[in-house]
Image (cartoon, rainbow, N blue to C red; front, side, top):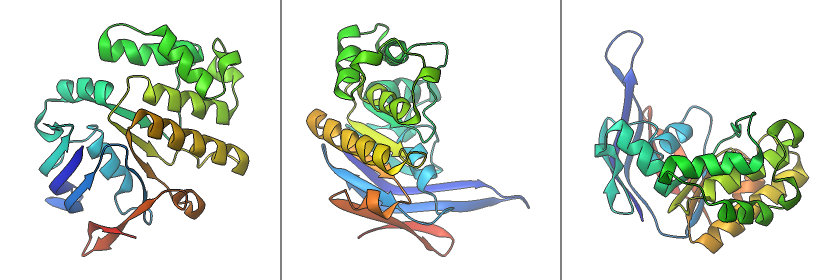
Length: 225
């Protein structure tokens, strides 16, 4: 479902030229597979997630998701592809404060398909335990509840791939465990591949597979744990 080949990311250096920050010779993720991506700060985990999500364009290489090489798409095409095929759970949820939980999910559907599916949005909010808070605004929800809305929003368009960047880092242990279990369960039920970036060993331990991003001569390589 996800195949990465000869992926290289370079940024402009302060003294001119470019600095290579990420190199991944090959990596793949099957439909429904769930992995945790771990590593020290500054090794490129978020950069990799942004590349896989089509937020950044690689300097070199191929990123194939469901048969489409998103590295070759225009920015507008990547935005449409991400809305249709990729669910993204941010560390900070980025809910729109002027819209209710239900409306936040419906807006994501509108962007992808030009229409919302209220029944699907309502169903997902129920599955994450927020059936009684459909019409609550983000400011009326706890941090854990907001992250649950973020998970529901990420799954609303039935994505092939769900990417999550430290989704539980701002939560207490109880909310962390609840949110993580929801994410794992819902992605399993939806047969969506899931990659979660985390620094938390307990979070990583819940996944059947862990991938470590390690520095190799100022570049990063992927190794399985």
